[in-house]
Each structure stands twice: as structure tokens, then as C-alpha cells.
Length: 464
Image (cartoon, rainbow, N blue to C red; front, top):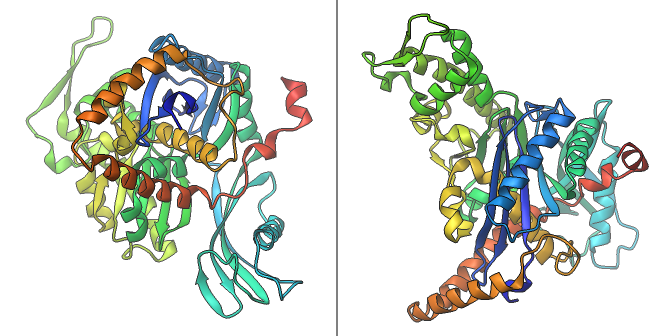
């Protein structure tokens, strides 16, 4: 498919500290070409939950406006939205089903019925089952079956990962997007979006924990034996660190945030005990001297608490010594100095920073090679997964677009670059694209349910 026929997909990451909108389109090599980027300060969102509808709408509108401003030929009408928040929970269940037609092969219908049975799982009042992810199947006495379709058997069973959340909290996010004059294509769990952006096949095979340290929450997704084992949302992140600095050192919130970003480090032992930061005094008061050592102690205490939660979840799964791929840190909090050393010290596992750069190309991609944009890039990848698997139609349906004149010019440039490549490079690109595609398919295909089906009801339309 030529590039001008590829859909333009926009990811919208509504966080506690920032709202990011990124528009991208795949080129012929399977890379995402960034067409527009917009970022705005977030208001009305606390720990991933919308607390003020009007403020959240304004933040979304600002991010979309800046995205279009970065590329005036871009038109944005529909988005993929990330969801997190401390109301998101997960649990493990087991289900079995005796087949009626034992002589026939196991079909997708048998799996769908098995998944549907899990809707009867008990969950706390006020929560809603968001997604049911089959992990591994059992056919009669054969265990650890990845794909049972086509096999013969009397009884089929599976282990399931069930994701739940507060129905009203999720509907509020969708309502904000709708009132910003945008169409929500789908709502995606943020830990899974971040994982898609920073993982590859080797990570999936070795077993990894994706830890996305955002502004309001720390999102976690654990993969082992090639399947999703666990998701969690830890209600502590960058905002808590900022508040700790503000309260501990007696400074303004803006000053605390600036000190965290410019001078913050996660290991107090690495801080210079003779270094000080000078804070201007308020209304004629003398300047305040802040010790770099004290700042690092405050940050380390909160980061260690977050990592203790990560280790707790891994111990609950019995995987604290089995993740040979270690921990992949992403999100804005992953930019703290010495965060890798602290993670390795607390968890005993290897750690690295996850960047979404494997999937990006083009001029604007350089500024996005930052862990804070992993979720938004993952949302775009989810959109392309839906498009390529036939679940969503984009082209010619009145969605996001750019004039074809711009596309033709860009194609000519890429043709020149392709001719200059050495012989055999095209085949390598094709193989690489197929391998990355397999990773994303394995990650996303397990998500059988659609978030949007739960929330498109008459009540929404009446309110809007």
C-alpha cells in the first residue's frame, strides 16, 4: 500500500501533568513518520482520573491546537486515548468449558464462548470488566497451548487476565474527548500502549516488566513466556515527588518541579554534599539555599517506595527472579539521574530505559525519542494494529487527513533515499518490519474486548 493511502492516526495521552497529541503515518518500511506534535499542561486530572471536566477539555483542545499548529495541513478529527488511574485493577481467573460438538475442530467460536463465561466473574460493586485476556489454553490433558484453534478435544480451558475499572471514571475521559469535538476511536490501557512502544521480540521471550513512571500514576505490565501476566497501576509518581520536595524544603510547587527536572537524582549517595541551589526569596525575603544532598534524599525516598511496589507485584507473581529481560523504565520519571542504579538495587533485576525510537522516522521524530512519549506512540501503534487486522476502517471515512500534494512530495524524497541504499537493504527492512509486526500482533491480539462497547449508551448521548 502506498503511503498516501495509509491512514493518519492520532494518539492522545491525557496525563496528570501533561496532555500530548501525536499524529503519525506509516511509511513503506513500516516506520511511523511523525506529522504533528502537540503538548499542553494538564489541568483537571489527578492521578489519572478526571476531576474537572471543563479544565480537562481545555487541556485537550490546547494539545490538539498545538499539534495542528506544528503542521497546518493536518486535520485531526479522531483519536486513540490512553486510560490509567488507580481505579484500574486486574485479577487472574481460570475457566473450562465442555464442548458440545466433540467431533469438530476447536474454532474461534469455542474460544469466544470460553471468554464470555468469564463475564460472570465476581468483581467489586461499581467496577466494570474492561478486558478479558486469554493467556494460555488447555485442551483435555494438553497444557500450555498458545493457540488451540484447529485442535480436537472434549474440554477446553484457559487462564485469564481480567482488567477492571470504575465505569464512571472511564466515561468521564470519553466525555472530555467528545466535548473537545473529537471522535474516540478506542480507549487503550496505558501500560499496554507503553509496552508496545518500547518492547521487542527478545524482551517478550526473555520476560520483562514495563514500568511507566508518569506524572500521576506508575503503570506496570509484566510479560513472561510470551504472554501478558499482570497489569497494575501504582498511585504514586512524579506529582508525589514534586509534593514531597515542596513540603520538605518549603518551596513553591513550580520551584519544586523545576528543581526535580533540572537537578533531581534518584541516588542520594551520588549527590555532591557541597552543592547548593539558590531559590529567590518571596516578596523581599532573602534567597534560600537548598542542599543538593537533601533534594536527592527526598527524591530517593519516594522513588524507592514506588520500586518497592513494583517488587511487591513481582513477588506476588513469583517472577522476581525469572524476568531475564529485567525491567524497562519509561515515562517522564525515567529521566531522573541514576534511576537505573536505584532500580537494580531495589529489585535485584537488570534495568534499562525504554525509548520509542525503534518505530519512528522523519524530522519530528528526534524530539519524540524520549521515554515520556512512549504511551502516545503506543496508542498510534494500537491504531495501526486495528487497521491492519481489519478491525477499523480509516481511509476515505472522513477521519484525519492531509492534502495529497504534501504526500507526493514526501514520497519523491523517500524514493531518492531508497535508491541510494546498498543492495539488500530493502530485504532487511522488510524482515525487520515483519518481526516487529509479530510482536505487536502477539501483544494486542489477546485483547478480545473493546473498551468503547462498554460506554456507548443512550445516557452518554443525552448528556452530550
